[in-house]
Length: 444
Image (tube, rainbow, N blue to C red; front, side, top):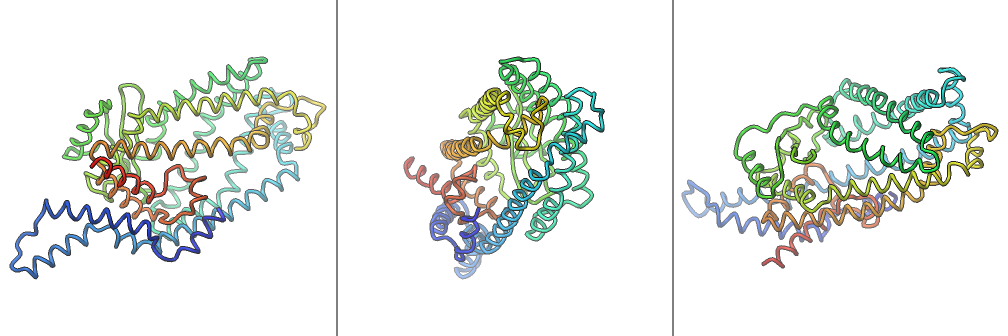
């Protein structure tokens, strides 16, 4: 994070490599448009030249990116500064809670509320409720500042205070309604499963993941946003034609009102088997042209066609299996760890406490390594999906579409390479554009 912060302070001029790549995109786009279009209703060469210049300026990306460069740097600076501050606070909070015996205190409070003679699962559920509420209170000032200070300052935030707290209440209720039964079943399986409980937990998490992937987009997401069918027209026809071309079983095509919360844009797909759906943010429809949307969807469909979605799901399941297997090795041999966090060694340590401490301490360093490897895999998959869109003949559309999204979202134009390698699941814009240009040259 410090590297990214220093990079924002160091780069005060538009990066030369990005300028070279964008100039090439503008040049190619200008050449292709010159062949397709000629200005109408011109009376002489001077008017014709002026009209051509207006058309070029309307389409050239480099001047727009250069104009937004300082704003992008300012946005990145504010986010990084806020990230450093919130991370430092989080570290201090963790240390203070540790020294004050926060977890044992909250466990005793939970036991006092539901009754000390209650089952471990009931006390565990109340413990999670208390910890969740405390975490929500301590994180609330940071969320408010991020949303209503940083995002608003840079023109992204569109939601009201009422909508913000409405979302918080809905999220809290859903976490209790879904998280409560989930936790109770998880603890029951661990208690019932014996020596090989991790196998049963693994199977349970697999089933739960499949159910949530099915239920979440259909029942939960509509609680927060409105999903309406994409209006009939050329764009809708083109998207269905692209899906048919790739044998993607598209059944529904939605537009989501993302603009009521933010001007950031996105598009995503969901669904199992023969029931696939695509969702476009309304902000995306405003920011890019129809052909560029097709180029972006060509990239997203590439993830599906190349098996990235199933691969990510499989990797996630392997991650769960490995984590709970390691937990099974530690659960009976970590009394010193529990004692270090203020728990008595004279009575059995609650399973939920054992889980929390395992993932916060023993598993945390390994988790960092695994997360980095998954980030590298994600970056590789992004390049592969870009290539898929290029092979479909949508290279120019994807390039200009990515540039416009980057422009509208004030994306980082010169990120520190070390920071981006570790943190960015998507490669920086200049790397993706350069790779697509090289692919085009090879194809020619």
